[in-house]
Amino acid sequence: PLVALATMHAGTVKGTLTRYSGPPSLDVDGRVFRNWNSSHEGRLDVRFALLRSCNTWFYQAAIATGGDPLIKVAQDFGMGFRPPLPLPLSPGASGNVPSGYLVNRAIANFSIGQGDLLVSPLQMAQAMAGLANGEFVPKMRMVLQYQDPISGEIVEAKKAERFQTLDYSQRDLELVRQGMWGVVNHPAGTGKRAALRYPDVYGKTGTSQWFVD
Image (cartoon, rainbow, N blue to C red; front, side, top):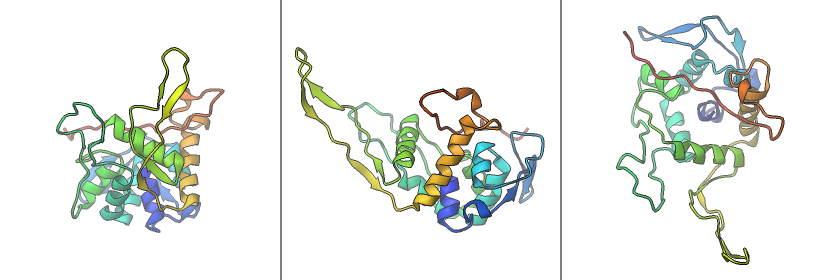
C-alpha cells in the first residue's frame, strides 16, 4: 500500500490511468523476479495491482519511480524509527529502511517489502493507522485512559498524539484504500477469506521472502 502511494505521489502512477502488465516473472538487470501467480494477470491499474497483490506490477512501478520516494514514504509512516514505548524493546526495534542510492534489484525487493527492509508488527500497525486516518500517523501509546476501579468513572483520558503529519493527496490515499478493500471484499481479492459481514475489513496479502537456489 505505501509503495502504491509513493508511486502516485511521485507522479509515476497517475491514478487509475496508469497500467502496468502483470507477467509471471520479470527480468531485472539479469535476475528473475517472480510473481506469486504463475499465470499472467493482464494489465492492471493501481487498485487491481493491490487487489491481486501483483509483485511484477510493483517491480515495474517502483523501478520507474526510483528509491528515494519509496524511502521517504516508508519513513513518513513510521518505519525505521524505534517505537517510543516504555517497554524493554530490543536494539533492533527500529527495524531498517534502506538509505542511499538503490539499484534496480534492491528497488524491486523493496517494492514488495523484502530485501533490506525490516519492519515490526508495531510499526505496521502504526503505518496502517496513518493510512486509515489520512491526515497524520498517530504516536504509539499503551494507555487509552485511567478509570476509577470501583465506579468505572474515567479519571483521565489520554489524547492521541501525532507522530507525523501527512501531506499526501486524499485522492491517492482513497485509491489505496479502495485497493485494500478489494483485497478482502472483491471476488478476485487475494485475501477474500478474511471478509466479514460487519465491519468491512481492509487488508493486504504478502509474499514470503525466498532465496535463489
